Each structure stands twice: as C-alpha cells, then as structure tokens.
Length: 322
Image (cartoon, rainbow, N blue to C red; front, top):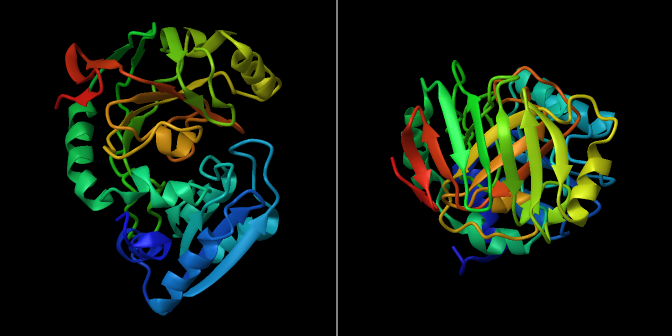
C-alpha cells in the first residue's frame, strides 16, 4: 500500500471497506485541524464510483465525544455512508447513535493527519484482519472474569459476563447501520458496570491528552477511577474530566490486532497496535454494549499486557495467543 499514495488508500477505504456504490450519499466530516488533503482524496474516490460526496468542516471540538454542530448531525442521519476524519472523535456522540439508528453506515473515528493514512496501520489489509478479530472475539465471548496485568504495573480485574465482544472494529462496514472506526484492528467490550477493581497504568499515549511523558496510574474501585496519579499528564487528565458526568467510569477494554499500527501521539492508530490493550474512562453505551453514557470516552494504552479470561491467556507480551 505504501506505493499507491493517498488516492489509492482512499479508494481502498471507500470502495472495499465502506462498500460505497453509485448513487449513495457520502458524507465526509472534518474539522479545522484535519489535513486538507484527506477529504478531497476521499471525495474523488467516491465520485469515481458514482456516489455523491459532501465535505463538511467544523471547528475543532474541545474533547472527543463532544457533539458535532446540529447541521452536521442532521447530515449524518441523511447520509448513506459517513467517514469522520476530525481530530476529535465523533464515535461516542448522540449524533453517531442517531445516524446508526437511521441506517447510516460508516466510520466515526478516523486519522485526521495525512501521514497516518500513508504509513502504519492504515496501510494494513483490514479484510485480512477480520479472521483474527473473529477468533479473538470467540475467545472472549461467554467469559465471566477478565484479568489484565502489565510490566508497568497494571493489575485490574472485572466482570465481562453477558458482554458481547465487538470483533467488527476492523473497519468493514457494508450493511445499513454498521459502524466502525479506522484504522481497523481491535476487539473490545465494556466491563460490567461497577465490577472493575485494581490499578491501570497508562503508557505512551491517551485520547485528548496525547503523548504521555510518564505513566499515568488510575486507581479503580467499584468500576470507577477513584484516583489519578503520575506526571504532568495526570494533572491534565484530572482537569479534562473535571465536572463531566460519568467520566470516571471504566468503559472499555480493547485489544489491538493491527500488525502495522505505530505508537504515535495519536491514540486513533496507537490503540490498534498488535498485542497492546487499551482501557477507557467514560462512555460505554455508544455502540459498545454498556449502559453508562458520558460526554467523554478516553482511551489509554497498556503496552505489553497479559490478558486472561477465566484463567485462559488470550494475549501476552505483545502476542495474541488464541
């Protein structure tokens, strides 16, 4: 994929992963921080297929999960296909939920910078990853308790009883109401509310915080982050979630399966890195199967986790073991 340029990668995303066909209304959502080359490449690919693309640009939101403008939210509902390449994720928004309920398909969190389309995770074959995603999802499905540890100090347990793993986060959306994210490459589920307990140590990068200079530790009790400690990024995180309802809920455990994903300052790509895990504070209801609604969903990376489901190891030291 490296030799085909942005146009070739955009064409693959639009045609193969999103299945755009002639006559479809294709909405491209960007913000003022999005690389200006991305939307035209996507629109050109859609036009070649006979679709009718529309490009929108909004101001950058203050945080991921903040609602887009009402005009864009309405356009999401009217579109057949959406690709959101804004610098703040639109995934955990009411607008995405309304669009999905109306039958819109597409990706609501996509890299906003050109280099992330030309290198790393976006150049992987999302279709090929789907088989591994399904295998990992099968290993999680029907489990009762998950235990996650890491060399950096993570040691947390939580119930996953009754929770359905989402193996579709490989970026393939062909059917009405199918929602995903780019780059493809994760399997995730929300812990049962109130069950997470222990310590989560976030390394390298986190949603809206960016690069982490020193590990950030979450002390978790009864499913909530009770304390946040660490370097300057810990202070920024506390300020970022201050006053936001349900922001301290443990909302997700995700396992990366993309072998080409890079660890950068962008969580959108970093959390897909093969063998990493990410855990999230905040919303768990936005397409994940949980019940907690929040205006934020903040993922943080765990670099080389050991992940056990009812005592069975499913990932260890950067390797998927099932």
